[in-house]
Image 1 (cartoon, rainbow, N blue to C red):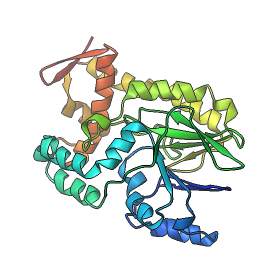
Image 2: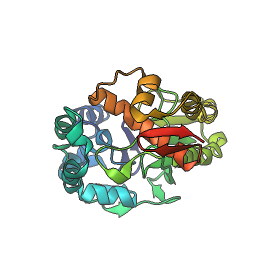
Image 3: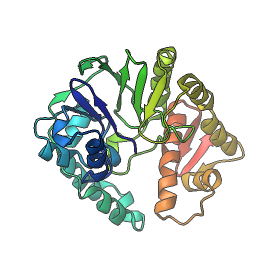
Amino acid sequence: MNTYFINDEKTCLIDTSVETIPHTLIQGLKKIGKNLTDIDYVLISHIHLEHIASLAYIKNHAPNCIILTSPMNADYLANFEQYVKTAFQQNRDFQTVPGLTEFYQDLFSPIKSVQVNGILKENDQISLGTYELTVLETPGHCAEEITFLCKKKRLYFSSDFIIGDKLETWIAINPIFEHYGGDRRKYLSSLQKIAQLKNKIDIIFPAHGNIIHNPRKKIDMLLKLADEAPKQVLSILNTGPKTLEELVQICHNKNSTIDRKFYNASRRMRALLKYLLEEKKIYKKGEYYFIV
């Protein structure tokens, strides 16, 4: 997980870290003569675990920092513990997949709710002094994600929307928050929007993987890859109807044992099938998916 600290007249932290006590961040700040109390702004791109785990700690130790995020993310952050509790009570996957409840409880139970200080929307500006960040709404990886463009330096902080070590970001149904899952149609729409800016970006700073020094090539590659996963599923269904479990087995080389690893693979497939249903390329009857 990459966290970015911008050291300007006003300082800015983009996302926090997977550590509930951010030792790595504290050490990094110390190397440049800073500490948590020197953070003026914290910008939260989305509320996946590794981006917010230390937010409550930072808020407690830097009470004057201004936390900004988008409307849905602000609501989830303010009511995080209640959302998690509701998910464990209502999501049937936690009752049917062995080990899933314990796995997610260990991850999410340390995370505390946090009230943000303000809301960010498309084209809002965060002025840091010499530099200014422009907010871009880029949903798709999850229901609501915001990313940040520094026009003056031609830098794009892409969070999980574009990642550095894989060809395509993770678009999946979210097991914790029912309405926060990824959406392939929205992702492709967001990607087209960023493609319009690719000649204005020299470097992409992703939340995962290596810094991207050739953003035009990366974005073009993502656009070309957009049809590959749907074509694979359609090719399989062309041989006959399949269940979700059968598609996961074929596409991800998973055995049919319904365990946590199989479930995680199924999350991405479920998001892909949702997209194909919306595009009217397939239909579902009972537990089976058919090609149109």
